Length: 300
Length: 275
Image (cartoon, chains in turn blue, orange):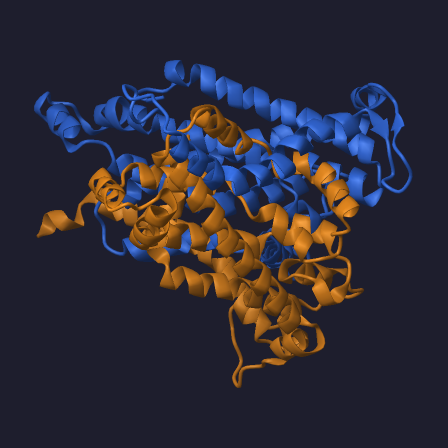
C-alpha cells in the first residue's frame, strides 16, 4: 500500500497538494455516503413522515421489524433470491468462460451477445420480460403451447413469480461474471498447465487442481458483489411485479422504497435499511477475514 | 486438420451458441414486436415482421410521449456526471497513488469502505438532505451526489501507480508543481483509463433508475428510465409502444458499446480487481 516505505518523510508543500487533490472527492463522499450511513441509524430511531419533525422512538422500529411478518418474509425472500440466483449465475458463467477459453472462432460475437444484457437498462429489460412472461401472448407460453404445455402464470402465479424474477436476474448477470472469470482464467500462467501435462495429469485433474483454485478469488468476488447487488435489487421488482402477486416477490430493496417513499415511514424504512447495511457488513467482513483461508493465492 | 473439429471445440460452441440464443432472443423479440401494429402482435408468429415496416410505435414514443425531452435530460445529466467523475476521480486517484501526505493510507481505506455501502442504505438520508437543500425535483439533486466515486478513484489510483516515475522526476526537475504534472503530463497519458471510466460512468447514469424516480416528479425534468417506467402505468398495455420505448432506451448504450467495446470489457475486468 505504501509505495515507498523507506522514505516516509513528508514534504509539506507536497502534502498540501495531496489534500487539495482529494478534497473534492472527500467532501462528496463524506456528505453523501459517510454521514448518511450514520444518520440513517439516527433516523431509524424515530418516527418521521419527512414533513413534520421526527419523533424519538428508541428501538421501537427494530422491534417492529422483528415482529412484522412482511418484513421477516421479505428478508427471507431476499435470501432465497440470492442463494438461488447467485450460485446458478456463477456456475453457468464459469462454464461459459471455460468454453470461451477454448480458442474458438467467434469470440467477439459470443462476448457481445452475453454482454448486451449487462449494459441494457434494467427498466427496459423488465418491460421486455413482462412481455415474454405474458400469460396469454408471451413468447414463453406461446413456445410451450407448441409442445402442448398449458400456459404458466410466470408473473401471476405466486408460487412461480419469484423464480421468474430470478431467471431475469441470471440472464442479466451472466455476461458480467463471464468476463471476470475469463480474465481470471487467462491470467493463469501457462507453465502450470505445462507442468501438469508433464506430470501426466488428465483434463479433469488439471481443472480441479489448477483452474478452479486459481479462479476461486474471482468466484468469491462475484459471490460478494452478487449478494450486495441482490440485496438492493429494486428496478426489476418495481417495474415487473411491484412485489406481487400476493407479495410473493417482495425483496428488501423494494420494501425499503415502499415504506420510505410510498408510505413516508422514514424511520421504519431507515431501520430496514440499517439492518441491510449490517448484513452486508457481515458478509464483507467474512470476505476480509477469511479470504486467505478460503481462497487460494489471494494477495492482500 | 481434423483435429480442429475436436469434440471439445464442438461442445464449447454448442454451449456458447445455446447461451447466446438465450441472451439475444429477448432483444429480437422486442424489436420485432415494436415494428408491428398492436392488432398483429397477438396473432402473427412472434418473430415475423410484415413489410412495409410499421413505425407507429416509434412515432408514438418520440412524438406523443416526450421521449425526446427525456433523452435530452438524461444525456445532459450523464455527460455532466461523467465529466465531473473523471475530474474528481483522477485528482484523488493521483494523490493516493503518487503524493505523500500524512493520513493518506487511512483516508484511502476509508474510500474503499464506501464501496461496500449500498445505495439503498444512503437513499433515505440523502433524500432528506436533498429536501433540506431544496434540491428535490431538480437535476442538481441528481448530479451533485454522483460527482465522486470511490470505485473510480480506486481505478485511477491503480493506473497511476504504474505510471513511470522517470517522467515525474523529470517534471519535478523542470520545476513542475504537482498540479502542472497532473494536468500536463499525467492526464494526457491516461486516455485509455479515462475512456474506460467515462464509458462506465455514462452507462451507469444512463441506466440509473431508483434515485431519479424518487427525486423527480415533474414531467419536464424526467429521465429516460423513469419515463419508460411510466409507460407501464397507463390503463392498457400497448406492447409495440413499450417495446419501442425499450429499444430506444437501450440503443444508445449498445451503439456506445460497439464503439468502445474494449473499454467496456476492460471496465468489467478492472471492477474484478477490487475483490
